[in-house]
Image (tube, rainbow, N blue to C red; front, top):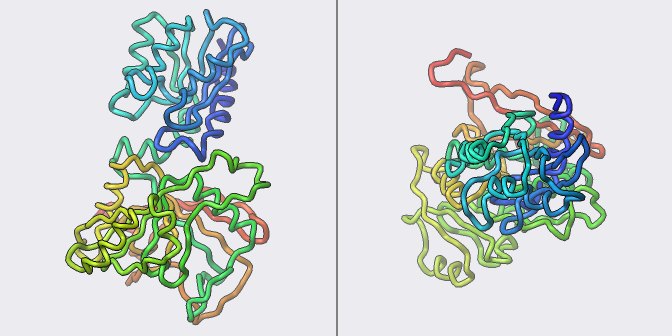
Amino acid sequence: MAQQNHQTYMARAVQLARKGLYTTHPNPRVGCVIVKNDQVIGEGFHLKTGEGHAEVQALANLTESASGATAYVTLEPCSHHGRTPPCAGVLIKAGVTSVVYGMQDPNPEVAGNGLKMLEQASIEVIGPVMEAECRGLNPGFIKRMEEGLPFIRVKLAMSVDGRTAMESGESQWITGPAARQDVQRLRAQSSAIVTGIGSVIVDNPSMTVRIDPNDQEADTKTVRQPLRVILDTALSIPPESKILYPTNEVLVFCDEEEIEPDHLKTLQKKKVDVRFLPLADDGRLDLVEAMGQLADDGINEVLVETGAVLAGAFLDAGLVDELVIYMAPKLLGSEARPLVSLPLESMSDAVDLHLLDMTKVGQDIKLVYQPQYRDEGEDA
């Protein structure tokens, strides 16, 4: 089959995989297309954990036998028994004669074993095809498997003059309703939302996903609520804070040496998950350790929604994979609060940003950047 056709069908598989954008956590988003005699005879995608993987769904939707067909899968078919049987074995049993894959599975339990399983069954294996697009479906799953950390986005909203709030702290609302609904989609695709105790006390946010019922992109019936994570060194969060409800989806990181035992018991009675973290050299909670624990919990993508200080700390720690900045057509003035607190002494200390995307959202502009961290000793 021509390489051009490979890309056509893989592009469709990528499109299908995106249907699981808000639901597959902690599993990867995967799409599958089954083709026979240059005709699509089955399609499927993974919706959520515990349900059939993309290959199983595509085979369940066949219009004719898959014997002699080609399966296009965005991610290498799994070879191990989890909550569902291995997909490589399912494809073999279905009688496909070739499998075109988008990328190899970074999961050490698979990592090429699915492809070997297919080849040992005399099935032709072709790939990777459209690897960059397929990797783009699952930045968090890939980073968690390869580096033991989640993919971390920091979301910020600012005026044209780079300010996030008035000097008094007043900040609602800098951006318009379209941008705020776009943030809800960012929340929905995240496994966890991280904020700091300062933002909780000042704004008393709920940090839940609130998708507009008329939103055409996110299905409100399948959107899940991400874990809400609060960085609170002294465990000073008020028990009545909105973010603590419902409590079974809340994790608070704190320093064991600074807590008040009765307050800890109050939170634990509410079934809030309270964990102790070591302090980093700067005297703050160790962000790398915190993010590593989230990865161990199966958290793929983290959305950081916070103020200038904690946003700057994530940048300073080199943890930010993506900066999402909503710029509103407003001027807040020179006394207003800055975008990030990141004390730098010279131009050589500046953090370079690579622009990935720029779109208009309502009257605001959405800017997506990738920080360009320098290795130690590298010249600016």
